[in-house]
Amino acid sequence: MHRRRLLALLVFAGGAMLLAAPDSALAHGLVGRQDLPIPKWLFAWGAAAVLVASFAGLAVLWPRPRLEGTSERRLAGVPRFLDPLAGALGVVIFVLVIYAGFAGSQTTTNNLAPTVIFVLFWVGIPIASLFFGDVFKALNPWRAVARAVAWLVTKAGRGGLPAPMAYPAKVGRWPAAIAILAFAWVELVYSGRGDPSNLAVLALVYVAVQFVGMSLYGIGAWNRYGDGFGVYFGLIARMAPLRWSRPALFARKPLSGLTNLDVVPGTVALILLIIGTTSFDGFSGGPTWGNIAPELTNVFRVIGFGQATALELVFTLGLVAVTLIVAALYRLGVMGMQTISPQGPAAPELAARFAHSLVPIGLAYVVAHYFSLLAYEGQRMAYLISDPLGDGSNIFGTSSATVDYTWISATAIWYVQVAALVIGHVAGLVLAHERALVCFDGDSQVATRSQYWMLIVMIAFTSLGLWLLSAANS
Amino acid sequence: MTVPIAHAGHWLVNVLYVAPLLVVVGVLAWQSMKDRRRVKQSGEPIARRPPTEPPPA
Image 1 (cartoon, rainbow over the protein chains, first blue to last red):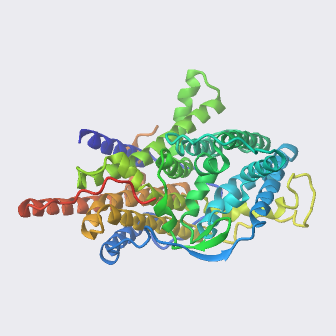
Image 2 (tube, rainbow over the protein chains, first blue to last red):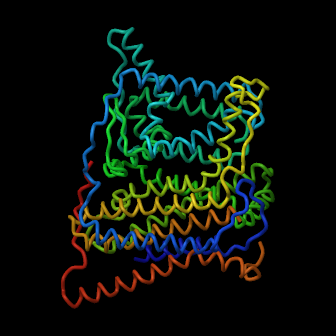
């Protein structure tokens, strides 16, 4: 009980410190002036009201599980050549990006590599996965190369490749979680992230690790648990109404794919990392961090670090701290849920059982924080496909295209962000309610009571998300 | 770092984002207390013990 109180105190103290830190003037480039009819904080109130109404609606109108254990319907067959063809396309894009990274202009906006990696890959693929299923699995270049090598070796040799080792159950999705943390560190902390050649080197290092993992544990097992991007995009794809597999395309209820997620070790950490690192991205663009960061950087400089290293250390601390606050918030909700039935499962088991309900929230955070990046920076592809190296070539005649910052207003972006956050959290509530119904044998009254704490967690994440967005856009 | 009190107007707006959370926490805490009181009077358990086996794979 004391641990719970201490954790609650720490979480709320952390949140209060973030909120109480004074504002300062700080300019933010991408999003322009918003013309909103009501103050932004009132959107947090509205979002909370929607969540409470959804919670009440679920309690009354959703008395038995409708997503858990549902079947899928075969839509159409998938031709055998489609998988290798998509894989070959992925390999071509990957090689082009790496080549552009090394051989092209080292100015970030003139090189194909940074835009493809940070905009199309990191933001575009999760959004595409939500609608079309696991598109990355088909395009995954390192999976395609490994499969091609395995096929060739099998054809050439008599016995084929030796059988892979069994994937260690204790390791679970921890390699994927570490990979996502590393990518977030590069994106948010690393001072050389804008340098295309650095990105190319890091991409090759990542691919080398994937080849080692796949050769040790097999392509399928490593893609399912060890490949950070494969696992992350695969999680998002579980929300999609479509599922691709080798023989066919299947249709299913949206979100239902998440209900049979195998929550092996590292899964909860991976999902919380997605929310935590995105939160830090928003937080680091706001005035509060703008006040804290220089002070902390000075501390590291006094110790003897250079300016760039000191800044990286401070941002690393911020990334870890915000992620830990997000994790503690979820843990607090789970511990609260446990108080409903103290004789029931322990908090770590409950955390695993309800982890899938955080996946829509993770995607909501990604959409809310990066929608403007996709909407504006994504347009760079128009000229980058004609001039991928930034050397003045004009392959498709579009090298003179520019970024139009007026096609969508800042106000419209704010509405998209709010809608993404609200829909994501309502989806999270639905999944948590479903799981509670299963856990409590369909007793909707008890299931609803057990979800009071999850409602609090969802409202906390919504308020946090809106506060971060409003601070970043201020 | 500047003294927060000097910027009360700024951070009070930020605190408004936490307000709906505090309201919901208050209402749910009150509801839970009511439930517990009712359970104590009736003698029935507030929640059945959920099964400990993992969710369906």
